[in-house]
Image (cartoon, rainbow, N blue to C red):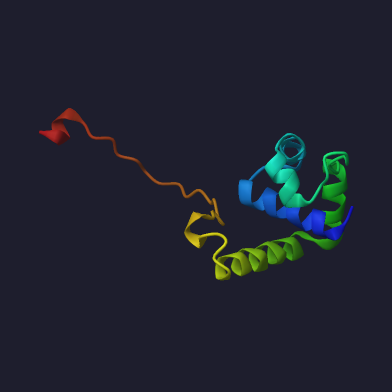
Length: 105
């Protein structure tokens, strides 16, 4: 697998929030994603296991750094707007108080 294909697929994974198993069918069936990843129609999309092995080889930190650099570069070139990219989806527990009839009166 060419490095540029791997980087583009990892960016799509990061950008869309898909898992490895969900990313491969999405790239296979979406022509725009295939074009973005530079995978010709006659070529097979890499397997999820191949993507996982390469990610394990390089490490999550390196992949995260590549994604950050790519996002910053695209934002500087004004190809994407930074406010539309979700970087962190951490959930914070909070108490929710629903309004009651007595509270509304």
